[in-house]
Length: 210
Image 1 (cartoon, one colour):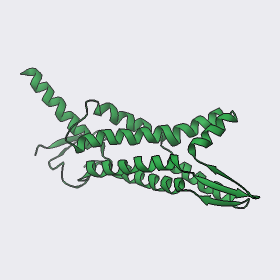
Image 2 (cartoon, helix red, strand yellow; image 1 turned 60 degrees about the vertical axis):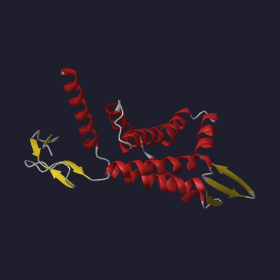
Image 3 (cartoon, one colour; image 1 turned 90 degrees about the horizontal axis):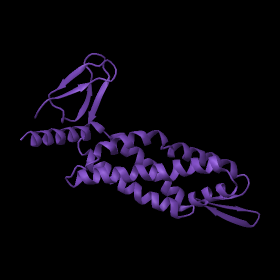
Image 4 (cartoon, one colour; image 1 turned 120 degrees about the vertical axis):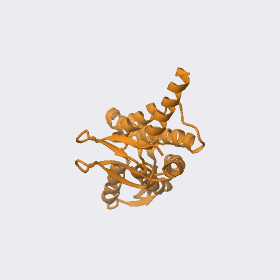
């Protein structure tokens, strides 16, 4: 196994790792900053997590999120109808923010993970894997599902005094999706993908030289 070299993001120390594929956490010998963490089975786990997240995303956006009963009348709401009502009320900024943070960005992240790690699981590195990794890094700050979930819990606590709140199937699916995506993000290590991209580029250079 060839040794790998890593540059510390804090002190710019170049470290040589003789066993890069040994499970564990690798730190900079000078400042102690974590260089990377190697976890075996990352590709299979992230692929499975995001397939589950894709299924939960569909459920969360199809079924009612909450049912609200007050004074003999009842109403149902889900993500799509909530955004539609906000646009009808001309709350453009709020509706667009919810659309991006609850539908567009999470779905884009899930699909990118499924395409990238699904291809790796089946033994193929996508041609635009580098662009996918950069896009995932840019989308990460916009994935605020956990913040939205806390907002939903606060809203339920306040609304429960006004009527009867019945959590829908969508709410439970949304909770599971947040936990599944957090679990996938906790084991995600881009270094392993960048290594495969580097190996492919080196092979391409050798073929071009020949």
